[in-house]
Length: 123
Image: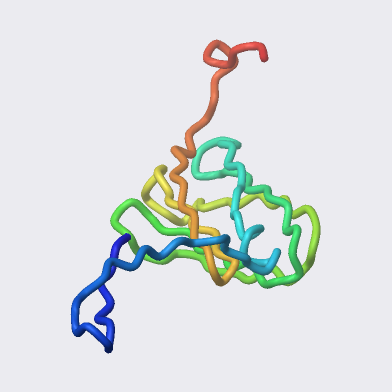
């Protein structure tokens, strides 16, 4: 980036180049990734798992297909989290799960339908 500075003695403009030597961030800002796994467990049933590596609250929000918030909870515990959600009262089988650590939000969708053994591939 080039800027121009005016010199006092000659009253002319002289180009000035700005260089960036480095940016320093606290480690907390660099490790704010939010990642989680969703797995269908049957009709309107799915599991959520993640690892809370920081000691900050994790907010879980589950939405139906048209965007209505149908469940919300806050996880305060540091470490591994695994929970199965049964959404029997809901009419949809497609859900959006949003996980937030206060700085970063990540959303994924899950189609919670029964998985037949014929559709399961060996891993």
